[in-house]
Image (cartoon, rainbow, N blue to C red; front, side):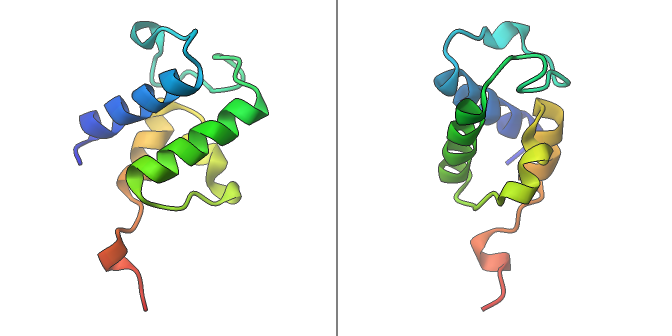
Length: 87
């Protein structure tokens, strides 16, 4: 996926979790809790949605890596694919 596709996917899942947000007004540096005012359940629901969408686990220790769209693009773009995992 390209960075633009990852960003679009992230925003789509974010809007599904918090439909009161306007995708057009979300900037890359907007923090989920500090700026967009998501609560912890919304963040957890976003993690679950992103995990399903990208087919990858996102461990709790990595939650700060998806706290903004810019961070999430870098993080999600670097997750190992199924073929990259050791058996």
